[in-house]
Image 1 (cartoon, one colour):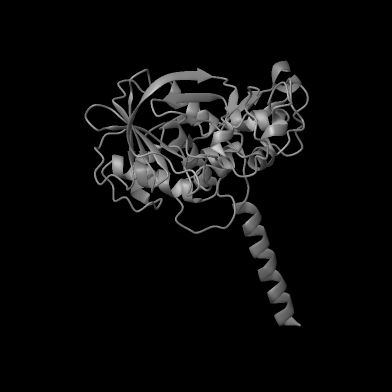
Image 2: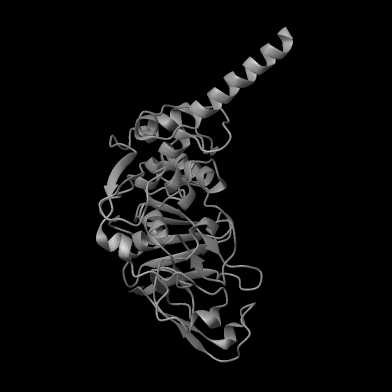
Length: 334
């Protein structure tokens, strides 16, 4: 009997500990400190680190509070650019260096506006591209998706940060990641598309890293190009034109078609046109898949990273495709 009581008590302590560890509010996340434990699920310290990485333009992609592969790659890139051993682990030294990049709170309050909650939204979007072409706009499905993308966070985590808060009424206050990056990087000399690492790196003339983004880059069916290209132009809120010569798997029609603009358009909110015919760097309707799946040959980023890159490049900016990670990255990244 005593043994059963002790076991029950231990289970209660473990449950309470798990609940405390899983607590996610402004105080917990903003005051989070270095934690080298391998906690399962969402971690306040990982969430804070993701937000700091995002601000510093070492993008972890979709912010979800978990130590995903994109988070590890972002940490590794940050370490390499700051003279630390690039092992991809959130070490004490890495945490201290990352925390020193910004003193602003990781989470902040945002008040929903009428425009946020009233759309216009596109509630139903077909999976097949030729059917998408029947829609007048490829908008966000709802306010949750719109706010999640605005603050670079997964819809699941956004809801968890705001339990019981509806997203349909203007004036409601949300707790969101503070991901304002400031002015786009200036002095971009070239953009490196690392096919093996599935990353896009932005460098200045000295080789200093200005930004790093996770990317989906080509596939066996439609591989990304090699060599060098240039930026031809930047198109915001683009339409998507399908040529039957692309022969994408799953597209059954033999006729060309055009898909209307919108964040859920196949190329997202921005298209950076390259000098290689039909290739570009662009956004995506599904940020959770960036760096984890392949593309139709182009370079796919989250919408927010694609827009960030588009704000810094110009006509003639060099784009270099590499098949393996660059061995040396200059220190002093911002």
